[in-house]
Length: 241
Image 1 (cartoon, rainbow, N blue to C red):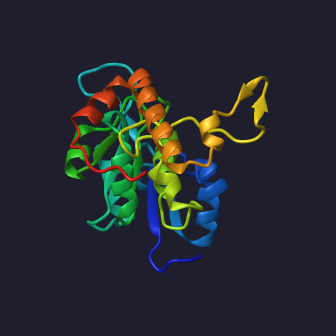
Image 2: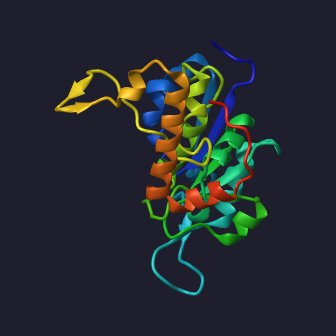
């Protein structure tokens, strides 16, 4: 299946050879091959102005490491010629934590420009001058933003129309209703003495739905009290079972 205006991901990185990487296989890779979405990995070093293709310098005020230069990164962003409707993201451990709701917003749009940080960070002036939205995928630090960018892209691509086999798959996943997903089972009926819960093979769809909801709530209360607190505060609506 092809579309006239595919969702686009433009990545600015010092290591364009890392892409598509995992994005070239499985659901994302199949959709990429079919033209459902497109990927462009651009080398930030192509915007360097000296013969050494320098992109970083020592931090102002001193300190360890190096900082990605504002002028080089700004030139890379400008050369990419991103239209105003496309979000400009910077993968950064100090950014706002990526959520499923933000993923849905990004998947519904034309696709983002994603800057992959390296070194000790990025000059603050280019973040402000090019209105980069800082995004984190968790409270830990990676060597660079490339793996984080792949995670964000994969999360978006799987929500594009036609990528997953069933639209219901996305609607019942973890975070789709501020809850973690309920436990899943399949054959064999018995595994090392453990049975599939009887209710799941009862054929009573209402009871199955109620069991799944209860399990999702119990898991969320146990493992993610922060999500459970937000779920409890959210306005209640009629739940489709």
